[in-house]
Structure formats: C-alpha cells, structure tokens
Image 1 (cartoon, helix red, strand yellow):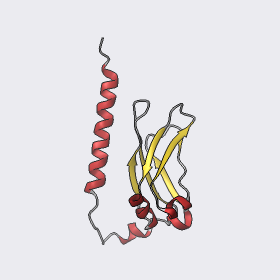
Image 2: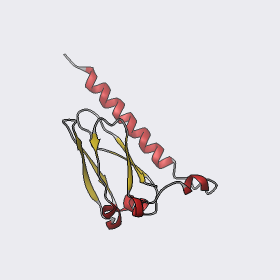
Image 3: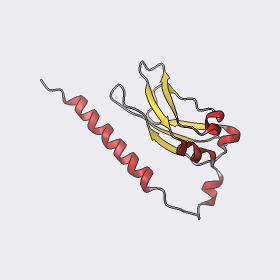
Length: 124
C-alpha cells in the first residue's frame, strides 16, 4: 500500500524551500532608511558568526572567524546527537556578505525527511 506521509513531508519541505528562496531573493531591496537596523548587525570579523538553525533538534555548526576571513567556499556538516547529519555549503559570495556584516540564510541538505534553514549573522 502507498504511504502518503513521506510524500506529504516531501511536499511540505519543498514548499518551505521555495518560500525561503523567494523570501531571500525578493528581500534584497535597498532600504537606506533603516540605519537603526543596520547598526545592530554585529561584526563577524571581530566577534565571529552567530548561527541560528530553524527547527533545530541538537544539530551543531561551527563557522570560525578564520573561515570568514579566508572567504573561500567551504562545506560544513551539521551533526550532533540527532543520529543524522545535514550538509551546508557556504560560498565565497556568502562569506563576502559576512565580512561586510550582512547575514545570510541558507538551506541544508535533506536528511531524515527534512531540511533546516540556517541563518548566519554576526555576533555583537
């Protein structure tokens, strides 16, 4: 018999990624009037990365100041006590954003039937 639960999860996760991608690509408007928001971004080179993993259930991710400074594409593994891992690629362009204290939001690989949205910003 056909099990529709994995199909439903796949559809929900695909929809999530589509909405996440649209949100990221559609929110690149220049809003120079929000200087207060821009002032509270932190500094990645001095203080390191601030990482938020949506829907996290014990995954860990470590991005060092040296990784940001080097600025070359790098693959990371989100691991932890979850029994599964996810992969995340940060490109040179993403590191350029972090060097200028601009956050990036990326999607992990799919594993165990789900993905995670990872937001990488700068510690204050």
